[in-house]
Length: 297
Ligand code: NAD
Image (cartoon, rainbow, N blue to C red; front, side, top):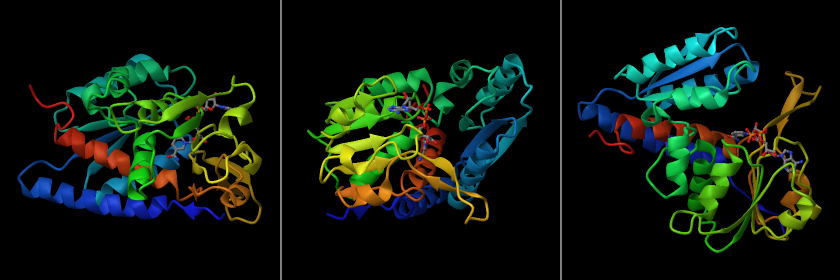
């Protein structure tokens, strides 16, 4: 079997075009253009790249944005004061603090200091909690983007065995929550694996849907998956490659070429999950501007 390719770039393009129309209709109806405030602490090159992609996405769909750039020496108090000012600014619809933060800052504390009604990343405990009880919420962008891909390609999820490798707060855990909810989108029987899981293959081999978000290149090999599985590779890893101008290439967590011969569907890296994550950030920002998740009292 040769897997069908899940083209995240194509689906993200379609999604972004629809969002652009939505934004323009919102503005034509007399409302202010949505505004996303990005906060960058320090100069991590990967963060700068990700913020560049998010800024370009905003420009493309017609969302206003700017980046507050704080030095990597900023104190927790100073950072939270800056976030408080954005929380209180009625012209700011969404706030995104680019992770990772320097080690002296607690991501948990910083995320909790964002007004949950502006938490367009969907990382605030209020939004994660609402996800676990099927309440309207800002869904974490990467799992939300993966569900858009399932929908676009009519990949059935209900009653399947889904296995998620990786249990982070931003990808693996919300993905497993969304897959497992019986009265919401997923309805799958869900197993979650992490670095303490013994005998990873004994779990991955039984997956109808395998979502891998571990940040470990080549972690999942063809012999670890079931014939015909749907394989969603979330990993983005830089590996050295002297044949490229940059000296590296991006790969996922799966042995793509070998798994492609065995899976029924597979996401490439790049061009799979990544573009959908950015599209879902745009969607959440528009939802925030429209007060769709948290209506005004
Ligand atoms: P993280 O480091 O916070 O979490 C990694 C998770 O993987 C942990 O739960 C850990 O226990 C688990 N893990 C690590 N090694 C493992 C192993 N050998 N076996 C089983 N589990 C293992 O990472 P994250 O923020 O969740 O990101 C994961 C990957 O996804 C990274 O490569 C990241 O760059 C990528 N990512 C991609 C997107 C996207 O849009 N495509 C978005 C976010 C993150």
